[in-house]
Length: 472
Ligand code: FAM
Image 1 (tube, rainbow, N blue to C red):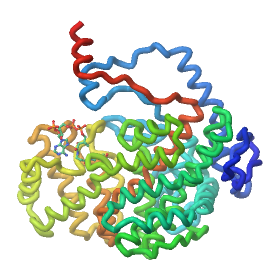
Image 2 (image 1 turned 90 degrees about the vertical axis):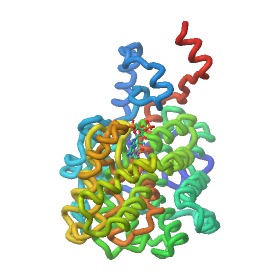
Image 3 (image 1 turned 120 degrees about the horizontal axis):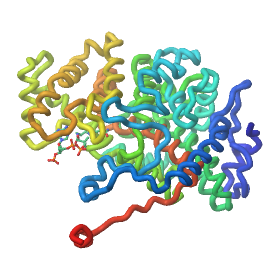
Image 4 (image 1 turned 45 degrees about the vertical axis):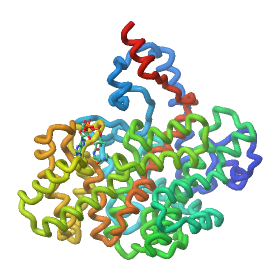
């Protein structure tokens, strides 16, 4: 059992101790474990497993890489370690072996920690991703309160955000603000003070928790500055959970349906194995031992691309375009015509297709399921149109014949409930995805450092060098 001997203040100090002798978290609740203690418990087994794999299987082939991989975005190439989740083309995502419906059944919910709401807590998902174990309700609550105790932004970061022009895309503001938080990185301070490599994971975990805790305040400040909603102030109520506080900061605290939706949204968007652009970027940049703030800011820049996270903004834009064209009660033919018009104009249908999945995305199914449970969403024309398109688009995309997966992905469903609840500034939607992706990308940085994974450095070739090689 690890003892909690390092005060948080010492971790903040630029002269961090040479050794992180203990997992560090000052917040402890009754007799439950802190997350740092729970992670500390799995460290020896994880290291043993890697040592075993290395000694027994280092030369075992994982399939061949070929020229198609090199010029085709490395699709399907098995070349990354990622602990939190694995994505199967047919059955979708599992988090340490648990599907989304299993997580919905097993992970502590808002109600389990005494808050109004039925959805699993993103805090519970974070615990699962970092430890492989389902937390007890007390552990989930303890983690929630720990995060709330770390949520305050340094005032200089608020000032930096306030200097951004309103016209600067919220994702650019978000990534820039996250970068500035590295001023207080405990990992960077500990590294500079000479902490041992085997102990890198501890200040990385501290930064991970600090960063996740502060993302809502950054997002809410940007939301207030750009769209004038919420109050931009950081009122954190320690009795509330992460999503509830976030919802209040954004100005939607009175909307229980939106708050509960945010819990589900943040939980299912967190981790989607390692190869997607945002997750991979965090791991890549972190492999240079850049601190978690720098690694995650880079990740957000990848998430801001329209083929990745920005697709949720694109979807809503496009849905409203279609809605304007076909009205609130369209015929199937009108919707099908609108889909063909998009494809014939050379655009992609946003929210459809996936680089790995070959079935409807289980994240889509979970968010769609939420709409089915709430009367206010069932009656929304925007939600109805999203549901209609999810039935009509797959045959159109199959007939179009290009995409390998004609089914909806998570972004097809995520925006319409937000829109219906009044969070209708869809330029902000990818920021919500960005708050969530931290729950998956940052835990892997902790694993990277538990395992002492090396700097990432694959081999590239010029076309001339490639031709010389294959013609030999
Ligand atoms: N509409 C029209 N064409 C599509 C399409 C779509 N939704 N999805 C794929 N295609 C096309 C694709 O552009 C490509 O055409 P070219 O050969 O002319 O380049 C062809 O079908 C083969 O692509 P693929 O192998 O099926 O997909 P990729 O693995 O290359 O790309 C996606 C995967 C997700 C980038 C792609 O399906 C797409 O652009 N979808 C729309 C944007 C979107 O929803 N992105 C969000 C993905 C989401 F899961 C996330 O990351 N948040």
